[in-house]
Image (cartoon, rainbow, N blue to C red; front, side):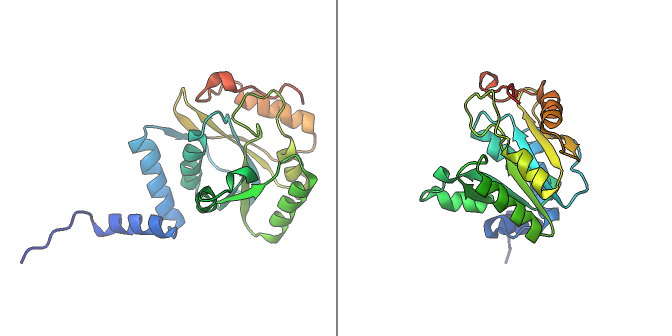
Length: 211
């Protein structure tokens, strides 16, 4: 008798871990890098800092695709991460997708309750990276939500500046702000990092103009 195998044992293990949401960090990095670079043709830029906790901001956010590419890119960095997402997205059946994606519902990053909730999460975790969009919406805004700053400042964690550039087909890390002591200085640094980054819909993206 002859036996035929359409996929190898290692490939089967990869598919199985994805379906069971039980991939090791090494498996996730391998899968994510293959999808992002070989299948989709993107480049991964920068290095994630050697820190156990951080607030990660991700911009520009002009399309639903940003979340997909961002998730794949962050898996490549091999970090334990949680997304903060609008509570309006957690309706049946999308709520199951959001939970699998690693998101938790919030009202707004502007609220003090959310800020203290995130600070408590940092205090109780040994390793945690919270990801959010400082724009707060896919529409064009000239004043970003500063909740991410106050989360980092109160929790005493660095701000990691992540980006997605559709023109260059790059996704990665622009830089790290280790000491977010002054909000005006921090916003100036962030604006500098994002000034030449192009979103999927460039007309929907603006730097923060009202710090």
